[in-house]
Image (tube, rainbow, N blue to C red; front, side):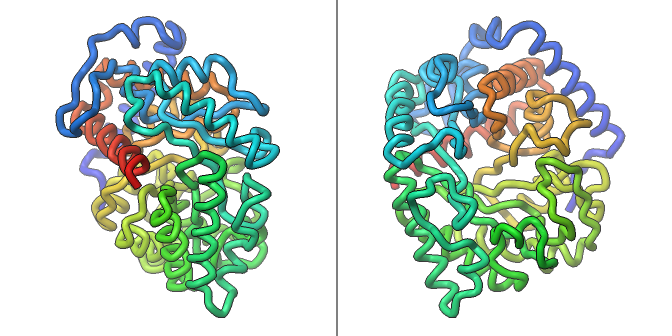
Length: 387
């Protein structure tokens, strides 16, 4: 299924969104946005009255460089203007060290108007090479899990191990597992062992076992990179290079989307989209900026009702779509719920909040979709609290 909006009008709207976001940033990161009249959302019991800027902030995950969160990030959390933080290797020396950091962030969040809804604290703990908590499980790569005789049991044990380590670190969400079905030996997913298998059914079984074990132990799960990066034939990270994947719609839906369909049926919390372009589904936009893919494929075809999250907004492959704040607005316009500002620059996270705020106040991001996205995000955070 595809978006009902014609392509030319979509292009025009994206240009308008980007231009207005730029103007908003030029005005200020904070002036005016936070002082606008607050709005109350009644459909989720207990969600407090939030200003437009605070609403926007719930949808942004920020990042920082070094080992110590900077004061501006702490203040944004206290003010209820950031919904989460992602951690990378440069932020972590050990589980004990990052546990002290997450405790500090949670203390700041206790002063937030959304303190009843846990701050999202997340990282990539996939397994093997790609795990930020080096002293925690899973030590196996996804490829090693998939190659095991008891691949379902091993994947479940790995998901459980990831959950234990993340709890120790004070985190509540994992940006894993990867559900890409790799085709070529030596491509990005295969080289680092990030894909379970070239068999979509095995990827589905392993990924579902991993995410289910995580979620049963109170850690949110994210499957990625929808609708799949396994057909990439070269060793490249889509964060660095524009990637166009030319398989047919039939192959995408029959192979690449199959593990995601299984994850959706299993009740996965979040789905992360890729930044690749899939001409068979949308000839113009990368998946995370495409209503045809986010709404048509993921929401309508796969019936996903959980939270959507972008990959890194600072990805080099997105150069033609403006700076990080403009990309955040365009992603929200495409139907993405959570915007991942993972450049290690707090300004990118705060700038994204400002751009989203002005886009909503100027009604270029519609009230119904805005409210639905906010509701999904807050329901997820409530579940993370009560699991």
